Structures are given as structure tokens and as C-alpha cells.
Image (cartoon, rainbow, N blue to C red; front, side, top):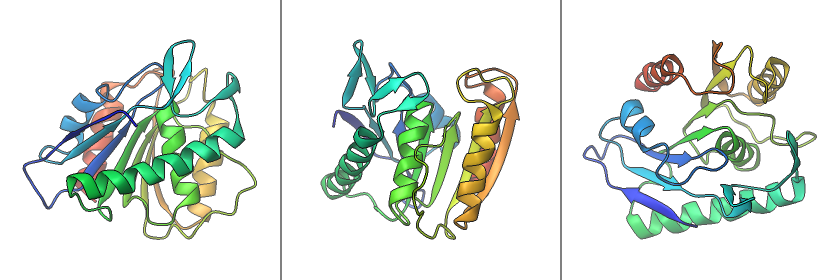
Length: 200
């Protein structure tokens, strides 16, 4: 997978794995990473799927309707890439924090749904429920920050609450942050995620 790795200055801090939104790339969330955890190593990943020339992490059938078979395939593909990247760059694969926005939050969520302890923490910004009807692994060691919009036209509040219920039902500790900036990532949301991560 196309990616960028930037070694941090503090080896005790987690490595942040960045998953962009539709049309983004591996560089998009680097400024957010600098805000969330200064000194952390950072792995920015670009999705392998193109939709009208725009990178994504998995295909969709229409707005809000995922190609579930492709989502599952890409989830496993991404997990394999993370293992390869850990070996290549020497970061601790057991000390990772996922940071995903929109489509990137959805692939990060799917990784949580499929792989126990793949991330220590996750910052999911405007995510949807990646898959339904899936038995989740025990997530009692996982902390999740969800940033959501009360007026998000792409991800309605009911979707966000359903995801929260699924994660907490599997044992994860979930912190919600609600804003009213639609589907946009706001400064207040990013700062709340930073404060939350600093307490992990």
C-alpha cells in the first residue's frame, strides 16, 4: 500500500496509523497527528481503491452503502500491510493508535471488528457502522474516541450511536464528542481527541 512513515522522537509514545477520507492520501492527516501526539511515529496509509479517481480504502455501491465483500477483503489486506510495515520500520505492532476520518474511520472500525488488540486506542472521526451481523472480538483492552456531528448529512447520529453500542457491547471504553459542523472535522473535535489521547 502507498504510505509514508515518519519516525518519532519519543519511542515510548504509540505509533499513529492514519487513514484518510475519500479523495485523500497518506499525507492528509499528518497535521492532525502532530496535534494528537507530538513525538509519536506516524504511518500514513493510502487506500488501494479508486472511485472516480479518488482514493478510498474499500468500494461502495452508493453513498452510505458499502461493498461488504470488498470491505472484508481490504480489511485483511490492510492488516497484512500493518504487519509488514512494523517489520520494515521497526515500530511496536502492539502499541498502535488508529486515527481515521470518514472512509478511513470505517476501515479502522472494520479492523477493530475483525482483529482483537490490533490497536490500543482508536480515534474515529465521523465513522459509520462498517459491518452488521458480525461477532466482534473481546475489546475490553480498547479505548475509542468517536467524533460525530449532530447534523452530519453522511453519518446520522443514529448510525453513530449504533456503532457506540456495538463497541461498548464488546467491552471497549468509548468516549463520544458531538459537534455541529456536519461531516467536517472541526478544530474543537481535533482538540477534544488530543486531550482524550493524552490521558490514555
